[in-house]
Image (cartoon, rainbow, N blue to C red; front, side, top):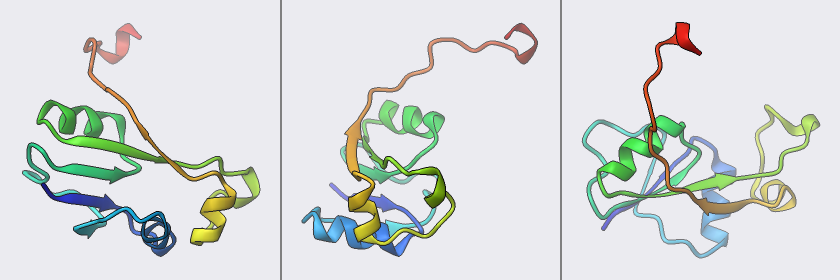
Length: 104
């Protein structure tokens, strides 16, 4: 099993280390074919990517923060993330239906 952190933010890398969460590979982008069944991915991922990973048997944990408006778009340190109640949440995601845009 390989544990991936998908993030380009040094503050997130530090936050994971401070939490004692072992990470095998830090990547800024997931490449096709990775990760594999049984692997675990941590980060902030699009819903469609989460669903695809879960269909392949990959564990996905979303990094969630309560970011106030004045900090949006700012580079956050690990301390900032802690102040924003950083946490990992596990979701089960699947596509229910595919609707053409004109039908929405």
